[in-house]
Length: 505
Image (tube, rainbow, N blue to C red; front, side, top):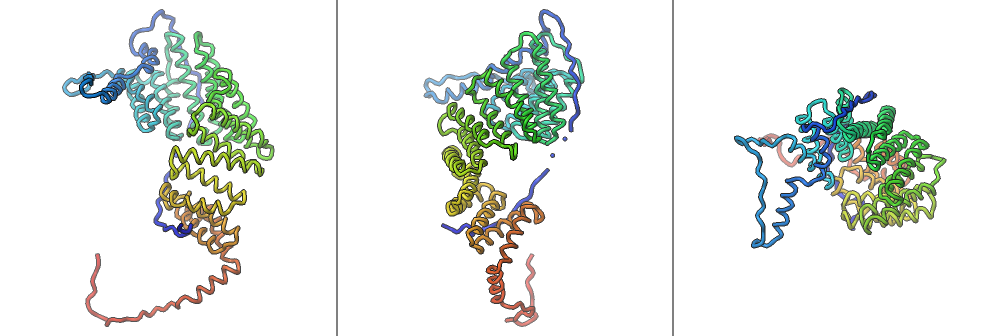
């Protein structure tokens, strides 16, 4: 096997940078006491939920063609494709119908985790909603809210999510929205809750905690107001309250306020248990957040209690998902990290067991060279160093280096971390020269990635200086310098001066 430090290096590449919110007044909703709603766009909005759940004509056609392709040619049925309504080569399909189809496709792509396609359909829904309902309608605000949720949850783009949520807020609060039924009123209030919720989460991601707190408090108040609507679906209402409570808990966790964070997470836990049972998979992220809240208490942290939360999440995951599924691997990894944070010998042994379980699942599911698998392997190497298994850690680092280069790139932070960890292990073993070689490679990558003035590059440089100043390394350095030939400004010539010189372009 090639030595850890013998891998060649090539050349690096650079990187890139991220909008502001205001408080919101109350939305005016006017109830119209009529027996039946008018049949035009508003009725289409009320019936939209039923239209979303029915399969689209496009999906039926594609599904039928797949079934037909599996049949023998003799029994294959001819399927009629619905022709587009073309007039002089122009598609004359009504925008309302195009909107319904776009909504179904967005829902389908989200379920299939096709991020780019889902975002494209959500953008299309926003444009079509404006055409169908007009500039000031609450359903246009709903489309902007859905697009904001897509940017935040699928792409992690908080500034874009904030911008679309604020657009939805200005639409909702800028006009009077009429409701012909309690169902429509409940939907308008639900859109308002979701808008404040997405805005609060986007602001939390950008560490704008006071604005986020105001927005999430507004979401909670509108939730309470929605409870007064007659004929409300109690399960939907409970799920809405749960989402708001979780967002508030995450806000206070990010703002380093563990007591408030725990209060809201416990509220979410109670709501889920009451409506979905004590073994619901919805409890998994809540228990993990409760564990993180406990770990964030610093000197007052009860590590046993934190581990217990992660253990509960892992046991629900094991009971709910198939053996060897990614979900079990994720909860095993979180539990391993909780055990390793306890700084107890027994805890480190348990952490190694769960990390190996996670590595085994990821290697089967993703493959041994997948970035997720390599990240878990890195954590395992660090744990092995803490447990005193330095040779085993070095062997694992050496084995994972080339896959890391192909997965992340030769000039990547992950490769630099491998070289740095290898250098520190060799330094503790007293192998100064190999340690110096690894640390120099780590410093070169860090300087190219972050700049020589970055704290990581500076810390590595200090370590290199410390090693080079040790007597044994300094003595070797001077002896090698003395063996080098002296520099001479006069170069010997084998050819006569003059003649023609070739110019290379």
